[in-house]
Amino acid sequence: MKKTFKRIGFFLLVIITIIVYSGMHLDIPREELERKYAIGASQFLDLSDGARVHFRDEGEKGHPVIVLLHGFNGSLFNFEHLVPFLIDDFRLVSIDLPGFGLTGAIPSAVYNTQSFMDTVTTVTSYLDIQKFSIAGNSMGGRVAWQYAIEFPDKVLGLVLIASSGVMTNEDRNRIEERKNNFPIVWRLLGSKFIKNFLLLYTPKFFATQGLKIAVYDQKLASTRYAKQFHELTLMEGSREAILSMERGEERKTDAKILSKIKAPTLALFGAEDKIVPLASSVQFKENVGSIEIKVYENIGHLPMYEDPKKTAEDISNFLKNKNI
Image (cartoon, rainbow, N blue to C red; front, top):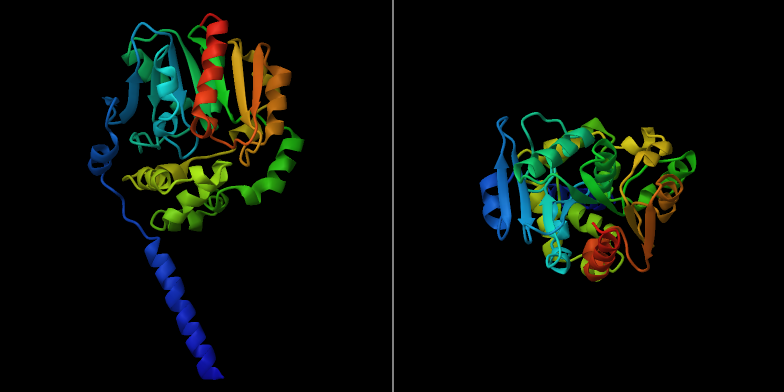
């Protein structure tokens, strides 16, 4: 019997070792990922402090501008399916925010909403764009609406796609009830020890599982897309940047701040979103003065990826109806 237990213990140890070893990844050099993913319209803006911002500027220069901002652990590639449906009528500027995508880590190591907004200002100023609409998904939505509050003279229209917002006590309780639906890696970020461990242990499973939670139609959680998520996270410095970020700003913000939004606003939500609950749309509806809300059935947290044609159609119609 003792021999049997020893054998079982040995095999379990081997299995655990294999699992841990297979999830250990060294950083991927920036140059390697740029060669692989910085194609097509990709450009880089090298700043005086050493930061290197990745962005795309697509469409005719004379068309109305939409700035596109991705969510947490996302990248401008999240909008690749949406761009073809908007490019005939709009100039589209998509940005990899600091810490993410091919922008990755920045020398200041400051990764918060203000840093993200500063990046938007830096890129649009570089492109000599004075006025524009701004669209953001999830965390990028929060950046977008805060930018609209801070720079009302610049923002002509605001598009929120499954956007982070603010939280009431009911929202906090709802999040607590739903936290088991969140990607595993998000649930591990509260521990300092785990954060240090994740600097090396970053299995592809994290990206695959996160994508499966984000989308409603599981066929859209493709291996290629998950691989891209995973590889961009492994870019040198990015894991440390992401793990250093303080999240949960919405828990500290009063909903009344949304009443400061002056730009005409379109808010798009997926009925099956497991990350930003549909009920959070109430905060936008009750506080934003000029807002139109649309709910997509059988769509999760990434409407611009899950149904880019419908998302583009609604964005285009909204902006055109507002003469933007």
